[in-house]
Amino acid sequence: MTSVWYSRRLWLVLGIANLSAGVLIAMRPSQSADVQTVVQWCRDWLIRGVSPYPGVDFRTNYPPYALALLSPLAIIPRPLLTVTWAITSAALAAAVGWLALKSTPFSSRGGQAVLIPVGMFLAWESVRVGLGLGQFTLVALASGLAALAYRGTIGRGVLLGIAMIKPQVGVAFVLWAILEGSLTAVLIAALPALLGTLAFAARLGESPLRVAATYGEIVRHEIAAPGFRQGALELRPLVHGLIGQPAIADTVHLGLVAGALILLVLAHRRMSAANRALFLLPLTCLWTLMSVYHPAYDLVLLWPVLVAWSKWQVQVRRPGAIVVAAAAAVQLALIVDIPGLWWKLNGRVMFTDHDGLIATAAQHFDRLLVLALFAAVITVSIRWQPPAVAAFTPRSLSEEGLIPQLPC
Image (tube, rainbow, N blue to C red):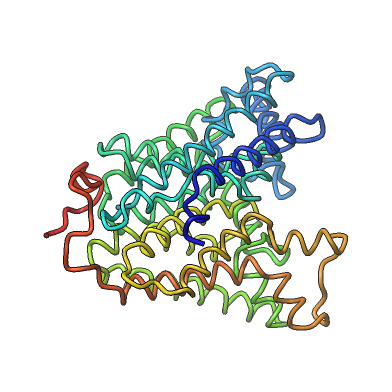
């Protein structure tokens, strides 16, 4: 299993094949609907001066500054837009795969084998679906990972600001920055949002406060309204399925989200420096996946989790067959999309409350997977002690200024 797990040639072939399939799907006339829709919002704002926020029945849930930052896409001719964004997204996917490998320290015990192949990420079903839909999740994810790798405070802040064009993705990196004490970078990250909102409001001739209030109402409608948006990953639909009374279910869900955040913060305080460098980002990614709306293609946020788990696995003297099998099972699930495959075989018919435990578990597989990973990673991050011998290569990420230097 180890030889297959670290086979760069195998994963390169699978990754390129999956990435190519995503690009080809995106180039179909009926595909890449998301990028075409977002660009239409940008054209309405930039060229026509029309607000894409017409009240409760909104046309967009993107922040105003996100549309301002993405507005250069509006000048790309329509025939070139799809192919341009498909190729750009493929490059971003490769960048995300590489950046996640560089965002966590690696062990000298085990050599370069610990650097799992980027092709493993490129082979994921969520990557192919995101490319086919013309999504922007990879923009936010690549910016967030680049913010971790960037040394300068200003550059890190700007990258965090770009990551927040998809707030449900960018919040994982902002939370990481706050816990790591990069508060100046977080404040700088607010500048792109502020300037973008000012530009957005100026083009419409409206007050920035009114624009912010309108977007805030959209967010409230998505999160707090009785007909809240249900994604594939957050715990809220599962809680509502278990608790019949919506008000109580919402309270329980809020308690779970707040409790998980408190647990994350407490775990961060108890972690060693090595464990923080390895596990903090995976935990913030898992927390946001559990907490707020996420469609299935946001499973790409699990890539830092799998990278950290694999690197930890190599540093453990005897990881055991269960640990190796668990990582392999997660990779397999992310390649074939177990719940999506189940739904496809059943004609995408949603299960009812009376379909039994197995059917319900299959329907909520992604949510249960994220919850199980959060429990496993937070347990390991607290209880695992790194080897007494220095675990990093002579020229490690800590020497590059990316993580705290560890004593030998």
